[in-house]
Length: 159
Image (cartoon, rainbow, N blue to C red):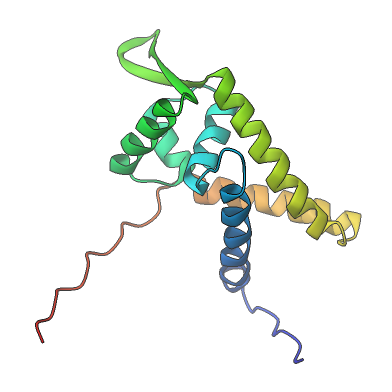
């Protein structure tokens, strides 16, 4: 088997590994009880850190403003989050985890971190610490701005 080519840039390395990691995470979350989508997991993770308004949740979960309302509606319907008026601005609502939402987040976290931790356990300790530090910085950069808009679908061609 040929050795993999060494990436020439951080972007190339990220493009190579991110889809592989995303596929693992997506499939692990789908096997959770209850099953979660990656967007639902990211939303629960962000809300577990602190109560958030929907606009901030969209940024942290990497979804559009339009998609966040559907995401929040699903989380509410499942009984995982609840809205409460923000004390400083009663027109805005903060999202917080319910006890069921916290347990769902905890079970998904144990599953995903446990399985991925097993895979990464072969890394030397200093490399694992450096990877953690660098990925935390990448998360901060990518979470600081919304992803690009999806392009419009191509026009339908008639046969």
